[in-house]
Image (cartoon, rainbow, N blue to C red; front, side, top):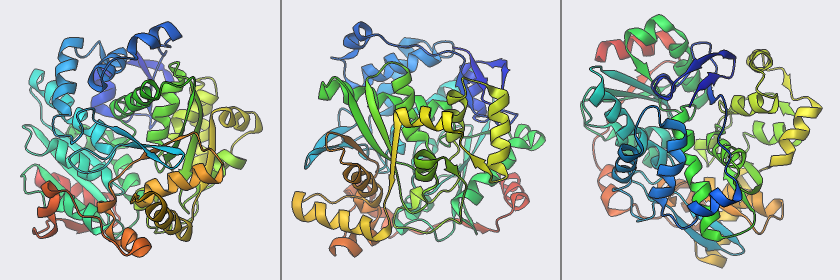
Length: 455
């Protein structure tokens, strides 16, 4: 498959280039030049496959020039051996809604689904290339832990994870900072997640620096993560056996819900994608009235969504503008200047596929409490926002993506129901182990110097 940048689609790239680079040199994001669209007959052939088989079929559409289907199948099977569910994900009931449980991986978050695959994909690449890669990633809580677990101990790979100091849960932090492998480095930045993400983007844009350290990235902008996440939309549709399906997706960086949009563009009969946000509601404002203007980031009970500028939204901008990269580049300049108002015709296009809602802190706690009392289910705060958005929009026949295990957010569950969910046994050890991380100022040069000192 051929790929292009959202900001200049005159140049073409292979899957290998897209996977290893993550971000285009012009600052844009990679997208396929054209997409495979399944018809109903082709979809029916996928219906009775298990999760790994569906994953192989979908991902092979995007990566066949890089890895053979046979090797891909083996790699996918290997990627999900550490999951507590044989089928990787699980569908359960919560009242009239369905929950798609995505937290059965080694770090208890949906990020594991893509990240375990990506870790093995890097290993496959390095088995054929005599190189050393330095992965640099920003995290709002879960991405870093999932990336570290997937990369730790692998030869010729280092990973540097930037998280906002004192702005993620204690359990989220400890899952990252108690890892003792020599190729893992944790950096606590004195700022918010957007600051961390901007530092990483700045380093990618500094071609002299990024090339000198052979830098790669596994944030949700990496196309390999998007396609790995697209799989569970297909899987859920086949399992529920409905004519069409809607999803409510707790949303921060727009990657997970964009994976659903990609599935729809590939022919999956998705009705609506609900973008569920906390009080950092730029995406809700954008989708409901076209206001894509960032405000100051608020600290909330759902820290993985404490984001104002959603990187993957650029891919949607590209598609709603008929793959016009020149116009996308112009719009992204406005986004950088914090002055982008979505045009009416574009907003109409967005609203054909997307709905949105936001939940404040009190609503989030009430949703956790209510569902515990009525359904005897403990929700993590991000999933609670997804449930709340579906309820506000009266979308009862809807699948809510349950993105994290509630034990990762003991402060939130304790506030809501006076109960702390116990971490699974295999993660209990992180609570008492020594942590190792470096606190740095919100300064790109400081982070660069730290990285250079460790490689």
